[in-house]
Length: 207
Image 1 (cartoon, rainbow, N blue to C red):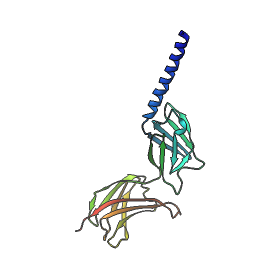
Image 2 (image 1 turned 135 degrees about the vertical axis):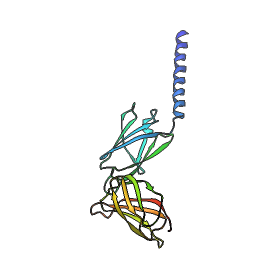
Image 3 (image 1 turned 90 degrees about the vertical axis):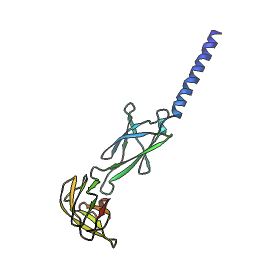
Image 4 (image 1 turned 90 degrees about the horizontal axis):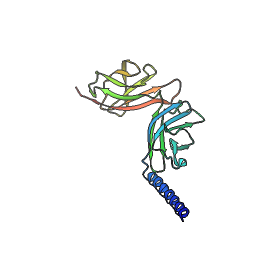
């Protein structure tokens, strides 16, 4: 009788244990991608709230395509994706990473170290003939760079770059420019592919 009671006690404990585990899994939050590091064809993700209960339900997509991966260290939540080719190349400078744990998903856009980013235009309002400053990262000054200003007829006119570096550009607002989105354009080498094609708004004041 005692043996039978012990047996049933263990069964109850096992049921309770699995019920608790299932309950934990039920409330697993959507994953959070803390970091994404690219080195050639290798992408390393550090992810919180990945699915420990059924690892096969963790899914990684790059630009909508499901990719295979390796869990390097569960304690650090590190996942490594190895591609057959470089993740960034002459024609791809941004990627969208999606991580799913079957309860939710999250996305993180990653950029090539060579991808230009415009952060701010100073001042945000200017007259034709004024010098404005564009601040950003990887602006690739002196690499066949053009800053284009919109005109009233729908075309663009080139602004003269008077100074700059990788983080700052100083440009003279051309005559006939109107308020709208400035176009940052950068061609690399002999490729016709735009390496940077970014817009940022500037209000042009009338004298």
